[in-house]
Image 1 (cartoon, rainbow, N blue to C red):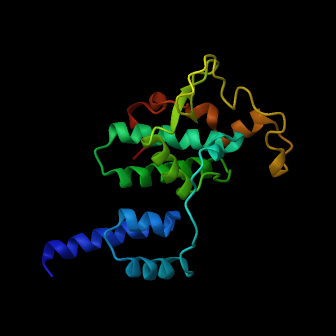
Image 2: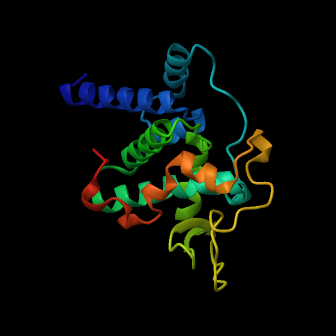
Image 3: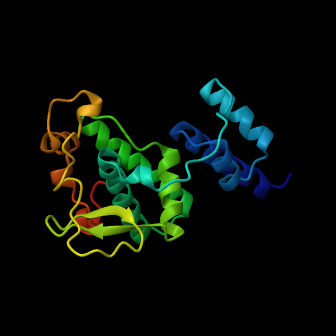
Length: 202
């Protein structure tokens, strides 16, 4: 085996480890990592202690439209978009770093992530396939995940117009404003310009 191929394999293993630790499914690993299915399964078992879960990847855009999911999805995708514009790294590494940044932001606010890695990756694919878009709220000017080609005027985001039962499914007694505060949304912004100079992205 040549020196180049050995180094290349090491990089692929490192990539696989990163993805598995973040919760990537086997289907995603097979499409992004240049290792055999057998090696990926062994690596997954070694890291997670269990076999990779079976089943299909999410295929509906509707999940991203629900109240709390839309907040988290919009937060992540604005981070991803910023990283994509300002980074020359491979797409998979942009995805990894954006998701890690999302997890860091959620942890800093002592909250729980709603968007898992599989749904984050699937959402990026939906954007690439022109099934989702970012729509600008007419009240707060934030950019939120919405169905593509939905060009209705006067779009209002889920933060400015939360549903009447927002948060109650989780047993929370706080309202939408309290949930937004817990996530630190006021200080983040929901646009690419929300992190000037790349602050917090390194």
